[in-house]
Image (cartoon, rainbow, N blue to C red; front, side, top):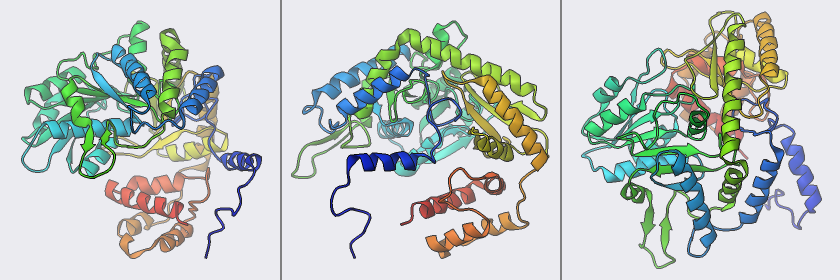
Length: 474
């Protein structure tokens, strides 16, 4: 039977745009600073409007063939060059986001360093899951190194994890969960002494750290100017404030960059040569990133970085005044993680209470001794006094509500569940039985997060995959 999802005749433009607006009613707001993750707002509406216009101008340009569309070469050279100028030089590739940048860095390292057996990448426990994803796709193994009480990885432990199969060592500048910088020079030196490439994940920090340094702050060395650092990723859709998805991966050596490329002549069709993971893709994000960089300018980025960092520092001060809360680590960028030392004050309940008041505080589950916490990304538009007021109110309400009521034995039952024996409909019924409806957005998630928090990571992953499958089920 034909589906009724596609109309027989085209619908009017106004009607379609109205429906999009209606669907967006349930979304978190992308402006205003009340969402402390996922979105980055300069507070300068003219910049965002310009980026949208530039995106539209380049929307239908296909990045598949730079000889057919030389504009993409000109734009990419300028964007990558601007990033390289602030991050130690090198050459690079414009990508769709941090995950693709990291994927290309792992591919390049794997291809340049031939090893016997399955290649390995050595990463801190706080490294972004994109490294796990890259390893999964590229047939590598992740060797994870625990972090210390300051949430930094120990270079000696990194050295001990390197084997003859290691193709890449990773450091974060900073790690996303707590905004803490790994000791990049020491880790890069360890990697270099073993003859192994070293990648610095500066996806979140790469376009704020150099501006903080230029504003006079003490920023530890972290970029391609550090001996032994061979590649670096920097997202422009984070503190570059460009629309999604815009990232750059830099390589210290052009021969390593070439190892990130892919070409195929094994067919009778058009020539295939890709700098990134994708083949056909819109040049819209590239045009928007170029426009944003040029519209904001160096002075604008220094101002935004300083404003964001001052907001983070004020948040840290304010958290210290709220009983039961503490900041994890010493952030070097405008990222702050807040945990609770009070067993009667649950951070997941705080997140729910904040959501009910129009704020989104990002929950982070416990891992390797790091307690569950709430993550805050501060940007150029963050109103910290309003945020602290919302946080204080949410804490009072959460303390009154108490921890989530997790049904006895539910976590054990989920850990032992045979997920392969359930289809999506059956898993959906299971979710409904514990009060979870994937179709409902913005609902209370404290109980779900509390259950996930006590499960081992592998079980969390399996359940999340099934949840996603149900969410997108027809």
